[in-house]
Image (cartoon, rainbow, N blue to C red; front, top):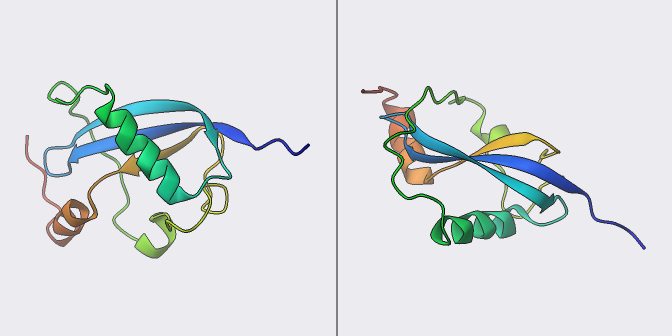
Length: 110
């Protein structure tokens, strides 16, 4: 019997790039053999199922590369493992449209 690899993955739920507004949420027992698109669905469902919606108290420095999108943005058809996710990996979760706007004009406000 082959056991699927499980990991702890920290997800930064980015509410606003401009205001550096995000909240880190830890997911335990994440199957690395699942597709990225399935993990995205899990994160979205978890957010609706009780993650705190207002992030006003969680403004921090959002350290995130704006380069190498082809390498760093996970392909939805890959498994998490094939996309480079391992135990204790931290990933950002955001609207791609918001990221594109911020990348075009990377200014932050307080």
